[in-house]
Amino acid sequence: MNVPQIEARDLPADVFLLDVREQDEWVAGHAPEAVHIPMSEIQARVAEVPEDRKVYVICRSGARSLQVAAWLNQLGREAVNVGGGMRSWEFARRTMVSETGGSPVVA
Image (cartoon, rainbow, N blue to C red; front, side, top):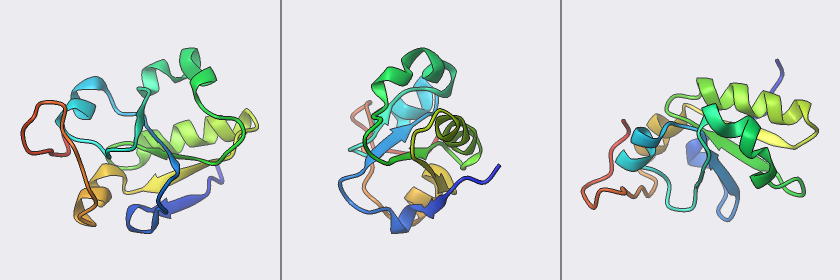
């Protein structure tokens, strides 16, 4: 499986960032500009993923996002895995928001 990868700290602004974590993980903390489609729903909701631009896929550690990025690439999309996932995002001190109103965390 040869999937392009980028580190969270190197992710450019204004990209389509697809967060494939589950709902409880998303609620705890996520990138403010991310679009949330859990991995368990991606096949049913793939029409929500743009076909005309590069998609950056993120999860907690990079494993689920790697699988989703590979699948999207097989469909002919251009997908890139965000290595290290939200753990790396948090470590790089990139902005996060929480749906709970509290301090965002990577769950």
